[in-house]
Amino acid sequence: MNESSERSTIDNKQASDEGDTKIHTWIGKNREIVIVFVAAIIVTGISCAYYLSTMLSYTNPGFTLDDSWIHLQYARTIYEGIPWEYSPGFPSTGSTSPLWSVILSVLFYFSSDPVGLAWGVYIISMCFYMASSFAVGLIVREYTESVSWSVLAIIGFVIIPRNTWLMLSGMETPLFVFVLLFSIIILDKVEMKYDLVLGVLVGIAYLSRPEGILIAFCLPIRFLILTLKGKVDRKRIVTLFVSAALAALVALPWILHCLSVTGLPLPDTFYAKVHVPSESEIEAWNFWWGLFVGQMPFLIIGGFLGIILVVKGKPFPWLFPVILTVMYRLTVPYASLINNNRYLVPVFDLFFVAAIIATAWILEILLVRKLRLVDTNETKLVAISVTMLLLVVPLLPHYFGQATYYGKAAKTVNDLHVNIGTWFDENTPEDSVFATHDAGAVRFISNRTMIDLAGLVSPDIIHGNMTARETLSYLRAQGCNYFVYFDALFAYWKFFLTSVAYDMVYTVTIPPEVHVGGGRPTMSVYQIYWEYTSY
Image (tube, rainbow, N blue to C red):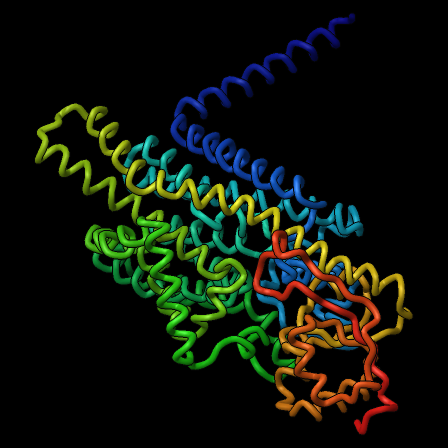
């Protein structure tokens, strides 16, 4: 080896040693953050592995909700360069989370196979789930100044009933929860540079799920807190206006798309679901919330004792779930309950964070003042043990029960919707058009043109205000020759069709011991013969 090579080797070794020293120094200074991060990865990873292994004991990789395939269908249209055309020639604004579909579109660079896509969705979901757990740990550490409380919060967060179920469902839940938690972290920052970050986050939250706009509702509260702290001047006021402009800029492309398709600024999911609640919907809401409180005692703690966060000038972990709860109760009380309460899971998550923080503050004060415990470690140990027994342990039976439910739900969707989508792909012409009430897997797997009679992804249906007869005339005009429907629901359409005008060409029934979810156990493909109708 010549002198130049030796010198190069020595320089490289010195650079490597300096890099290792910087890493070790950073870890030493941020030891608690590293602990929180590792805890989030391990705890969340174990939970995901448990749920996925339970699913694989029942069925092939898939999703627990048919709606998850809707996101993948939108993702495919983005990848194919015809974004938001749910079926060819049918632009749609029915995406609940356009940002989630944009993220999932990356998967089509690697695979178009449904099983491969399912694994890709799991990986992306787990990354956001782990990031959410880490954010929970950071928030609790910041509020309690204790890494022990952070680890407890991460454990409890992961075993909240329905949490892992929804995080691995293929829906946008992990993205939305992460954005909310990250927003809480940023809202608590007082430096001016975070104002612009918040503006971007408001736009991202809206694109993650429309109700993410709640972050914008919290900005005036943050402004008031900053004013009381003497952190607001003319420059900052200008920055806040720039922040609002950034929020609008991020959300604007989706709003413009909605306006171009329907003439309305909001996605069709809003117009399909939001309405003045009926008395029966309110009764269902009250009944289920009674069950939720019994299953998850932390809801009472987070809802009522969480007010202490407002008193302490840290209101956002409490305000977020309160605003969401009121929003859902006033607009979609029943829709928020279906599909394993998928809209409410972020509410549960946030109330848990508020409950842990409030409990930590109150217990440590009581233990010091009432029991005269002066040893800090002893106080924390007792407080954390009590919290574990009261708020975390009661969740375990429901957590394990949800794992079984996860496997059965995925099997139900695979055996019913994916099965029929596969049959439809193999047994109908490529230019076939079908009408359905469940717009996910059958459309994605069959790759046939679809008209959604629920209206979520078909603007003509949701905004057409058509009668049943007008709808049938519309279907005929669109070349629709098939209905893919739950038998119990197709009975409604039989009233408008003579017995010779349709024929059941394929049917699937899920055994009662396996079937779970809000759908019906029997779904069939009906071929329609329009020549025997008056439409």
